[in-house]
Structure formats: structure tokens, C-alpha cells
Length: 169
Length: 160
Image 1: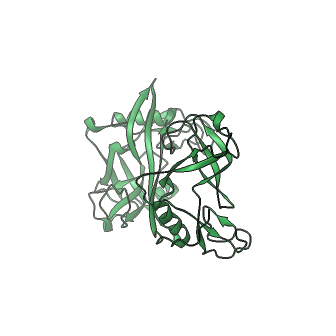
Image 2: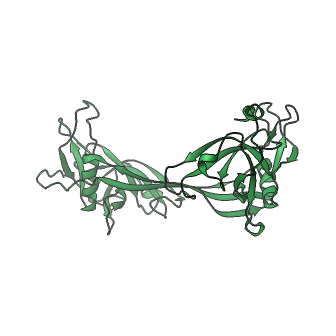
Image 3: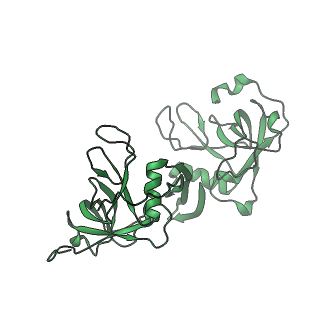
């Protein structure tokens, strides 16, 4: 029963309570087609039969037209930086040494940018419209993952005009 | 996020991912005292102006909103007020054999606390049943310092 006479303990100040969620992800038909392409070092987007936009990575349907995408389109290993972020803050689980650049890149032939690491370039030189290309991991290390693209690096080609990619920001 | 396993199951791709956050948080004086108490094998509650003891302790009176600072011990025995049987525990459940999630009102407390009851089976669970804390041997100042509650046969002739 209650006992007001005992001395109270010194309160704890901080606790560490890691929380984690394990889950099994099944990508679905279109992303699976894309991931199998990744195993072969190919980037396979899918085109909407109506608006003709090419999704990369494909989700199996066009978000605008709400119809399935069926036509596979092999995309270029080159693309354009549409926007980017220089990461200067360390955080738990960080895989890359700071500072580094996370860029949205729209590959030639695609209509959606994807996020990737941008390397082999000083962070202060990264800019919108910069031309970049994929650097793949070794074929032996490939798995069904976008991580097969280790990062993008500058191609040295001239920058492209903002108007050509403004729809893809 | 990590990809621990990648497997092909009848042509369908699937992978096991883990999403994890390593929270460190400050707990405040009331919860800090409660947790320090657990480490000592004590259960502490906050006492309201009405004389009720709230366990787990609340920093504020839920009715009057007054700040609560007066803390006192309650017993490590109590009664189950409601419960739910888990016949197939999952990997992250506190017990790996079938158990009950239960609200337990400890003797001396006015409120009930959520914890687990290690009962021999669903049939042995009963609202109002008497239970007692099983303390973990190595305590860290966490709610899991209470390993579980166990049924006790406190009244003569009572069925557990």
C-alpha cells in the first residue's frame, strides 16, 4: 500500500528507446519489372499510353491519367540535375560522408526525376541544369535495387537551359 | 532502411526492410522518478489533492489540471480491470508464449496501468483477478523492468 515515508529515488533524466519496424515489402508488377532491369544494369521506365509521359521508376499506372502503363522504355544513363540539396548535417545511419549532394535527376527520355547521390564533383559546383551520368556498381554486386546506381557524376557536357527541365522539378 | 534479405518467391520479388529510429528522450521529473523507482523494484505514483494515487504517474491532475509532484509507493500486487489475450505473440511482444495485455490497478492506486500477464491460458484470465509483479533481475529504469505480472491466489478458495 502507499507509503509516504520512504525517500524517493533520484529521477532519471534521459532514456534511450530505439523503435524499429521490420516489414516485408513486395514491390508489385511494374516496380518488379524495373528492379529486374536493375539486375541487368538497365533502367526501364514505363510510358503512359495516353499522356505519353515516361515514369521512372514505374509504379504501374499513370498518376495523371489513372490508367495502366505497359510500354517499357529503356532510359539513358545520362540525365539532368533539376534540383539538389547539399547535406551538411550528420544523422544516425548516415551512409555517406558529409558534405554530399542529393540530387533530383531526370534521365533523358524520362518525365519524372528520381533522387540520387551526386559525386565526383565539389559540392559548391553542383547546379540546376548540370548534365550527369550513372555510375553503376560491379555486376557481381548487383541486386534488384536502385542502389545498383552508386551515384551520378558530371558528364562535362554544357548545362541545359532551365526551360527544358522546368516541367520536371 | 536496410535490405537484409532479398528473395524470389514464385517469381514475386520481396525484401525485408527495417525502419528504425534511435530515440533518446528526456522524461521529466515525475516519469524520471517513476523509472528510477522501477530500477529499485518500487512502483511510484502521483497523489492528487483528492488523495487518489495515479499509476503510472501523471504530471498533471486529469480533472483539475493541477501540477502533481507528490509521489508515493503503491503495492506490487493488484487487480486486472480488463484484458486481451494474445494467443500468437509476435517477435517484439514482451513475452514469447501466449499472454494477456491487461490493465492492472495496483493496490493503493486509483488508476490502472497497461502491462502483460503471464497466465497459463486464456481460461485462467478473469476481470478482477489478482496479480503480482515479476521483477526482472537486471533492471535499467524502464517499464520492462517489470517482466510481467503473474496470477496470484490471494483469497482462500479463489480460482486463478
